Length: 317
Length: 280
Image (cartoon, rainbow over all chains, first blue to last red; front, top):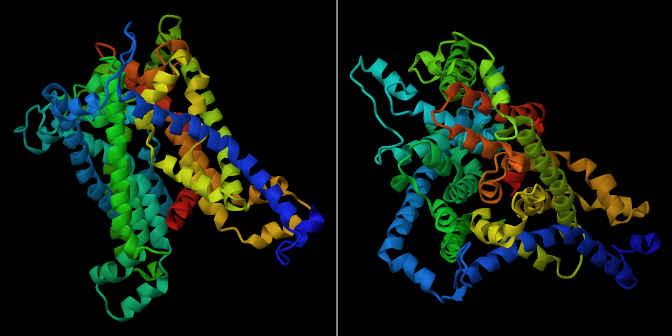
């Protein structure tokens, strides 16, 4: 095998056998992961599509019956179902529309601030990164206390102190006007460090000479940011924004934990995934929940494709 | 350029950074201090920050309360989480890196098709297959292996490895092949050792996701004997009336293993995540 292999780059005739071997090895190496992905992602997804056309209920003695597109029709037209579903969709959109620019912008600001040669800069970077390692279930608990509705809640009592006693108790999580904002704040707090690290790496790839040249041209810091920094990290910025928007659409853990244990306003914060899980397990309605997840998947794919389309023209390699 | 900065400017940098960092770390401080305080003092306005009456009583109580057949055993929850995370991380590193190597460096017909399939599956969020997976594996509920097995193969990890392996110069493998190494030996003896950053980054990302994993355990685990830590955390914090000191102590115990891992591997992590992201 070695003798034949050495000839590979030069000749084209006797290379058939090693190629065949590569075929075998490549397939063997890929097989375990591909099999796992097909078994635990591909097949379940196909199954979700199938289930969504049936009326399947957990623990029901009745056999599943074919339902056609009834589940989908109900999702969009039956007022009892479509009301909460469309509200959940709207909540998802609100979350994404606020979180993506907010978190990306904040991460960029932090990255620029932390992209200096100062002593202990590594320490500061670690501090801002730290919340990323906190499980959402724990983040939800901490913020539940900070935003607690009594006048003993941390935020309320801080506002009480700075307003010279004019601020009373406010129910941040329970009030429908601030419930989503609260979820957004704690999500950004937990996630911003991750984006920051990626952007920081992007910033460090910008050649220092560009800044020196800009300095010689007497460019203001703002001009440097506009004409050196932003073009330099364009690709990274787009990557981060895309990643954030897909992840932000999948928000579930914090909403679930807070609605179940923390008095979070359910209507204002219920997301599509929350809706699917409670349909499946509180109402035992697997068919309906599958239809929700299929619609959810289509939305995520559409978002991804739109973003790719928007980004592609400027980002060809 | 930073070295020529005036001392005043440098001082301003530190000041801005310190104030921001302090605000940012407040919730963590609150968690740490609260976990060391009597419960009545935790939810007590700004004084929740005063480091008075500190003790490890809450920790003792948590470990005490979760130490019986009826409430479950804390170290068992921790053990389940560690075991599941270990299987997912090590199994995932092995299986996904090997697949990425097979698809990026070995030439065979159909490899593009297979890789495209992987990219397509990467688009499927776990959330959207959770319900059918639950339905398919309903019989396996409350087992340990069902918590781990579905997450070993990971399309995003394959993609990260693929991106990294693609950038290795072909001459390295050609040299190995000249020395008589087949694809397997080339991979394990040459490529793996030189790919530490991407292995570290994938390992840590997988570990973080897995350690915080919540949705799947919510669906699949009701029996405390196989319950992972984050799920127990949400059960524990749902108790009425809530004992905040103990809940926060529980939280510290939940995040401690991750913080330790992070402290050890952070340099690799930052490099690895950054390089695969910037290239990708």
